[in-house]
Amino acid sequence: MRAALSALAILSIFASSGASALDYYRGKTVNLVVGFAAGGGMDVPTRLFARYLGKHLHGATVVVRNMPGAGGMIALNNLYSRADRDGTSILFDSWAPVNAIVGAEGIKFDYRKFTLITGLKTGPYVMFARKDLLPGGLQDPADLTKVKSLIYGGQQPFVPLDLHGRMALTLLGVEYKYVRGYMGAVAIRMAIEKGETNITTHALQGYRAGVEPVMVRDGVVVPLWHFPSRDAQGSYHNNPLTPEIPSFVEVLRRVKPGQQSGIEWEAFELLSTLYGTVSNMIWGPPDMNPEAADEMRQAFLAATTDAESIAEQHKLFGFNYAPVADAETRKTIDVLENVEPKLKDFYREFVK
Image (cartoon, rainbow, N blue to C red; front, side):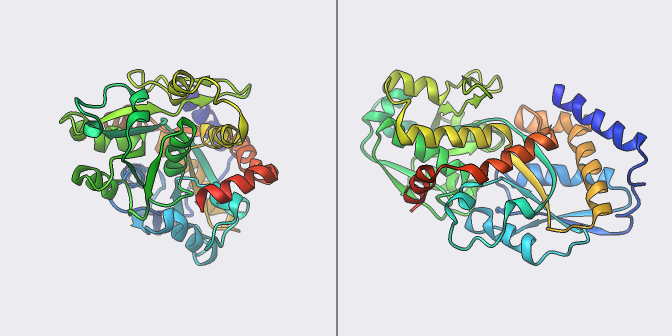
């Protein structure tokens, strides 16, 4: 509610200051790009926001364009170097800053040079596994340490979901095999149903929409934990959106009481800082037309705080995406400038 009121206040400031007359996009077609396959945890909210963006971007037609590959990096590279600067292409991004920290192969963009439309905060990530990993069924997340044949299904090593899930298993001291290359959440869920893999991580929206209604209901998988929020003082807090699922930090403290130190823990804390503040970014290309950028910001804020949009988000996900203040979002992006060399080295080895 606070986030919604803040966004409405921002909108009122735009209106009272006489900013954009909301005519720039009239008659234009806007490509809202998502760097993942159709039907996944990123695609579903993208299509929802596309409808409401079309409602608030006066006179424009908004089209969703899927551009999957390399954990979203193909879409980022395309926006950075090939998209028109007129604002007719923007990207709904899952925000994978570790690829920038490690200088991932194939990265051809600089997060700092994109035109920031807005940052959004969503629900936590949820890790889940096949129930039949142990005789009688996996009942307690702590029992994961007894499993000898874990196969983690993921997309790419620097994708936030994979980083969180693999980091959790590493901190718990659990042996696992990492199978990457799946093109989105739907493909991973199919692999788990077939038994090709047996554990993974989803964003809450993907978990609520694609896992809970069928795979949890039918007893195929069980939730293990959610990844909690971390405040400015470094304390972890269970997310109120997942009261039925314990936090990873709770499980870790129970299983490995002395594990909250060392380079692996520091790397996990950096992940918690980066993703605990901003979960998603809406980017425009570098040097985007300023008039287009102003109007797009207003329209996207309106699309996320629209009463019908919020109601639909709650129906699909059980929560709504909250706009993050521009200053806070930029501060989070700036964290990338000051990552300690030892953490860079750790991440390079981890994603390798």
